[in-house]
Length: 215
Length: 256
Image 1 (tube, rainbow over the protein chains, first blue to last red):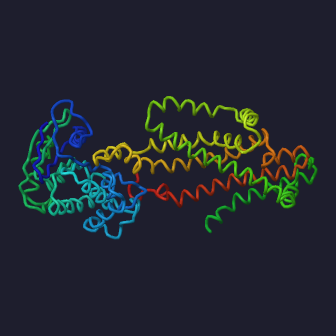
Image 2 (cartoon, each protein chain N blue to C red):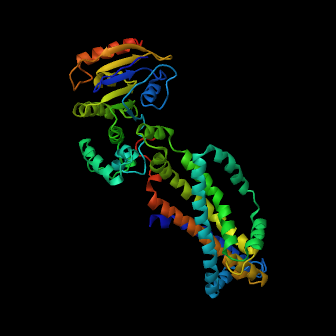
């Protein structure tokens, strides 16, 4: 398995369950040491599959958790996180606890929390897998928009091929156990992309063929 | 208000039971000296109110301070155990063992050792309350999602900061749950400690009343002790809802 991402690039890794996608992210984030080979990143922050927001904390405090983790004082962390909530369409929900937020909002808070960690690389682990199809579709548009105005190096792990093609600059297709990169697709398409764009559909089919799925 | 109305059913049960009790004793089913009728207990509650109150404050102090000591101690021990597997192996079996101590016997030894004052009661109450609080607190600490701890690692959070922001708050409901369980046993513990040797408190008053065959007053002390335990439990529940409302709010959308 070899994976490289240029600064500012969005690389999607798609593959069936159990091919080691999450392990890959944990390696990138330094949560695991590789058995063999090397991983070099300028530092990566994780966005987990489930939102994992703190149920007792407000949206604002959840968003500023990464700042607090670095030792920033509470008021200062809130002050830094506040304008972002507005940019993420969460104004008016600063004091809402996660239980009062919709699934899409929780995912946005979770993403903001990871973004504010200030790491050059964002490791997204199936960030929208737990959302319903409609919300997921909205979130794709939203994330594409955020990444245009706030470019980061992103490694996006997903089993949603469409998500990968719509969001990424490059799609790496992995095989089931043992997980290996079996194909790499360049997505040289302008943003914003629609799932129904002809080029997107074509790339999606190529990805499916690489996965060995007959359609 | 709705909650009050919902309480009418158990209230009705109590009224019916008291009625049966009253009729049973009045009809000569039991010697009033052994089983005083409810109206006699009610009368004792009123007539001896200042005596009951002054002894109640003694027991209440023992119970409240004892639970406080137990909660603080349990929190400290739980955190220590949480951080150190070695400590867990060394201390946890002893904690389980502490539950096997026969409190009435032990209370007697403590009184011999420490005298008739507050100290032996505090120790007994703390010992019986300690274990449930430790168990629930440890459960709360262990229930923290390991993925959340990993997430904090990718945010470069030092171990202690992760504890402060993530693990400690999620353990708080456990502390309160433990304290709620501890309330009932702590009142029993306080009474045993007073029976082992004291000159005040509701347990002491109970013993005195029984010795003097003042059974209505003896029953009145039991009644007050029970009501006190229920009241403490309710207060803790209320405090939990006010201070830790998130522990009660079920997530709205992510139903499994």
